[in-house]
Image 1 (cartoon, rainbow, N blue to C red):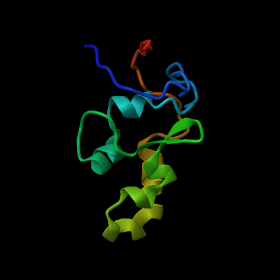
Image 2 (cartoon, rainbow, N blue to C red):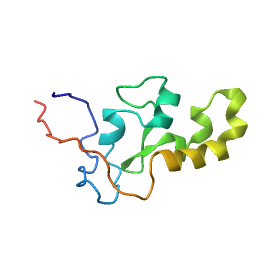
Image 3 (cartoon, one colour):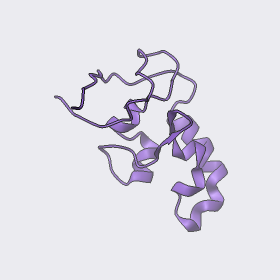
Amino acid sequence: MTRVFMLRSDAPTKPAAGQPCNGCGVCCAAEPCPVGMLVSRRRTGRCRALVWQQGRYRCGMVSHTARHLPRLLRWLAPVARHMALRWIAAGSGCDSLAEVQPTDRA
């Protein structure tokens, strides 16, 4: 099955599975992780917490946690950030098996 999703052309290229994350954004653009499902309120499609920052994609639940929580739950930001780091498996390398084929836009 082929799916098309748009990422910035200046985003880093996707690393091989198991290599360190470089912020390419492919995994989060393809589907949300468990914390992304909660934030995005969906099981498929691009995660709403995916943010572009300093030349790479980042998880907004890690970099801007309170911004992605409902106002009444923002006091939970430190705990939510810790949970997000675990749920995205931060530090364990790329786990996306997506095959990326860049396209030229005319």
